[in-house]
Amino acid sequence: MIQLHFAHQHIYSSADHTVNVPIRIRPSGTPPFAERAILDTGAAISRFDKSILARLGISDMKSGVPKKVYVADNTEYQGYIHEVDIEFLGRPMRIPAVFCDDWDRVNNLLGMEGFFQQMLAAFDHARRRFYFSA
Amino acid sequence: MDSTAITPATYFEPATHRYSVREVPRDETTRAIEPEGFTQDAPWQPRTNAHAGVEELAWFEEHQGELAGFAGRWIAVVGQQVIASADTFSEAYDEACRLNHSDMLILPVPRHPGEDRYFIA
Image (cartoon, rainbow over all chains, first blue to last red; front, top):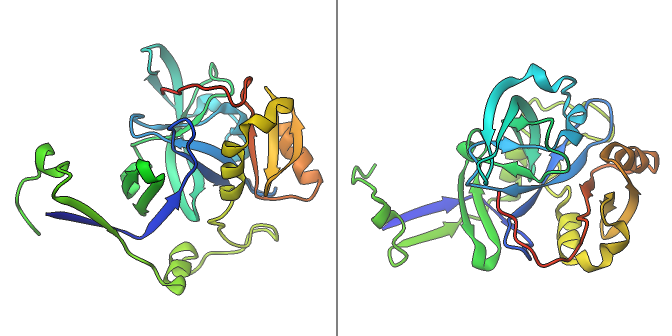
């Protein structure tokens, strides 16, 4: 038998079967705010909407590491990876996230590289619970 | 450590796979969230906030039908109330700040809130 132990649980709402969680952003010199993100184990890396670029302290999207990104329908985009500081349910984290100029009002996704990589995590979707140790 | 190889078949076997949740004492949680040396860098952000956006997001998810008036706009939510709306993220954020809010949830309202749909990333 394999047993996993988790330090934290988060109860989420999910009418459409996505796992929506808040992430907290702390801009320098202005009040912090929360944004919605989807926990997406199918995403190789996190991605954020470009609307919060400046608040994350990124003035030039293209100063990031260029990377080809393929979305669910296999469309290719030119993305740029930046290391960003977020707070996930009270835990400060620095994660790589990809931005793309062509994406407007897209859902923020928390993906595998750098995000789930930093934690032990499990879903109990029937009960709308996310367990993790970070 | 158990050196037995974990195969997908054993790893995902529901009959043998259980999990448990450890209750973490509050002081231990506090130490984890506020590591030693964490500095206060602004009056409005003295600490991390594990609750930021939690109530607001739950309310948003469960009250889509009430958001038709904000369809296609960005809103700032505090508690269970929309405190600002605008055409852009920045405008909604700035308006919420002007009203002296912090840790507001800012997000775009779908063009058809409450619509039965699936999102596949």
